[in-house]
Length: 283
Image 1: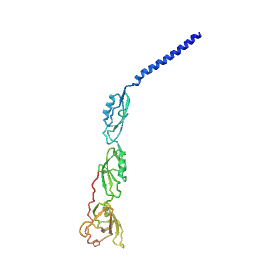
Image 2 (image 1 turned 90 degrees about the vertical axis):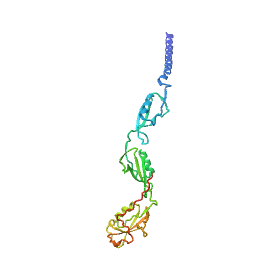
Image 3 (image 1 turned 135 degrees about the horizontal axis):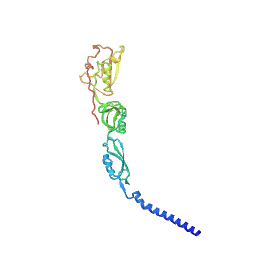
Image 4 (image 1 turned 90 degrees about the horizontal axis):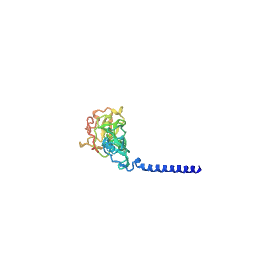
């Protein structure tokens, strides 16, 4: 009986071993079918193509497709901007390919504040917000290289106003005071308030002095300019020239009479406007 038990033990052990060997052989024999070894595919390049065309191409190769979207102003609507895995990758059939496509309609964002930034900083901020730099013009100003105004479709756009990505924002940049010369503005016979408004457009620095230190100036804004230096017209009857940043002396009186105006200062300021010099636009 003992021998019978031993024979039974070895028989069962051998049977177990044979079973494991058969399972091992079956596993590796079917591994090719389970993993689809040898049925690998190469991902085609669909970047830059239309979304529908890209989906059709991938579906025909038995890939799954997942779509995400963003906006790039320099790309066509519904164009594929990115794909994962990238083109040329070797993958199994049925793999999911992730596509990022350009939006059909650009989203709206708050307009950033570009005023007082340098042109380079403003350009970077526009790019980060997916906005484009439009026309760039220059204006005489002490803040050389700084953004003075931001405009959209010819009108000033304030920070926080909604604007669609991809829009062009025009910038007015300070060009410094420079050496541009122009005719001296004629402000004699104007009130101080009127004269300062005119001179501010030329970036000319006024110095105001009372005609008679003993006279009473009760209201500077309404006081009248009886003389200026330099004058608009010189003794030869030619226009005097001045440039941005120069100083102009204004002699004022509260209630002048006609005899208080110098005889040789024949150019009245009232109604006389020297054209403000315009610099050629730079783009």
